Length: 352
Ligand code: CP3
Image (cartoon, rainbow, N blue to C red; front, top):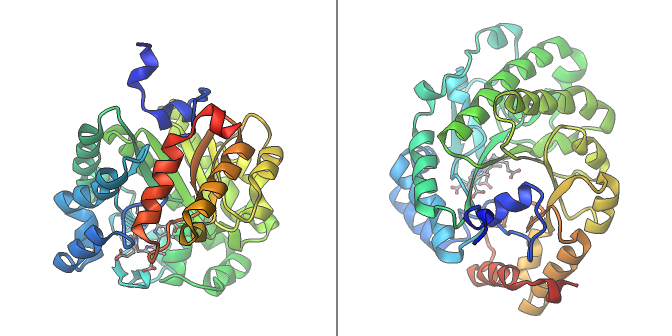
């Protein structure tokens, strides 16, 4: 038995080992498509309760682990969870997502934000992550996650999700100084939060810059990339060995830029063919992805063939098999089960 037998599969891929099959997990693998989750939601109707009462968040995080044994178990939480700790009050509304009670629109509001003290404002994170680690042992990898500065700023400034991002773009192009100060403060808080998650036991951390794909490349270089870089740089200063993943949704136009962020692994969405993503990112960049979540509505043969296609294009090094974004709420659970079974049965002969 080699030393690496004690290291879970996803972590080995993230560290750059050549493996017999890629590790597999799914973004949003805990949540609404699972009956067990919907049942628990009846008992705990508030999202903040489900994600901040440790026993409940632990149970939700482990529902997909118990059902499918994915190679990654992600903490059940939300990207806006740390915001109240900075002084930005929020709620997560059923079917709508985050709601910020007093959106950040002025310099004075930015000046009043507090630095994040995780032990004071998000102490439940320690209980949740350490329970996940002891539950999965070395059979799976525990992932933490955070929102990136631009995406959290988008929620803080807009006050909710948006289709056009008019309010934050108005600020970006008419009052950039205020926005840069907000982004700077969020950057510090997010780096603190990533470090905290790692100290609590997260083995890999994914940063979601979900709404950075709404920026044209030139504005991505001004408002998203420098702050992604700074978070990764700050985390690497203290925690150089923890692999960091970056996701941008709708990333086809900024894929090469994602590779410059300092992330160890770039998530590729389905708007880019995996073979071309490999070329565009270069042979040293690890990738994650990239099936269209909608593929899980197809037949088993169809799902099987799309998994093979992605895995063949990605090759046997530095690939974490995943969807290109979160699993959709109406996805049949048995297709999710089939996705995991198929992925875990792949071998070098079926792939080549
Ligand atoms: O992957 C996992 O299993 C962890 C769960 C997770 C949630 N939010 C739980 C959740 C993760 C990784 C997130 C991150 C998150 N939250 C992102 C980045 C990922 C992405 O999709 O790009 C974003 C943009 C948010 C903000 C947010 N929170 C949205 C857009 C929504 C959904 C609104 C809706 O109802 O469609 C939420 C609420 C939320 N967070 C839900 C879940 C499971 C759904 C609400 C519920 O289950 O009651």
